[in-house]
Image 1 (tube, rainbow, N blue to C red):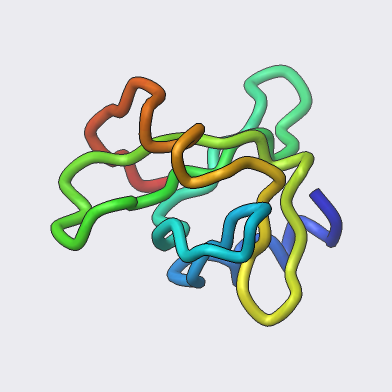
Image 2: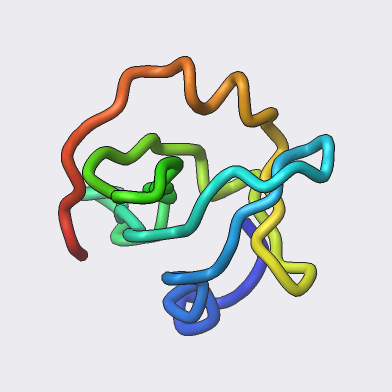
Length: 87
């Protein structure tokens, strides 16, 4: 994760690209660590309905127009998903 907390807030609603340059989804929430208060996870809507989200570590993400993550779409979409929760 590169950038200030304020900059990370602007990531919500941004498209997400995987490590292979493929579209993954959209950032719908940012989850903070309960102890440090620092952003730790990004919740991604990986389907059009945004009814379920997958989470990825925020520390490996950065902005280059879109949000770029260091995982592949297959790695993300095969992990357990959960209902979205707004921050």
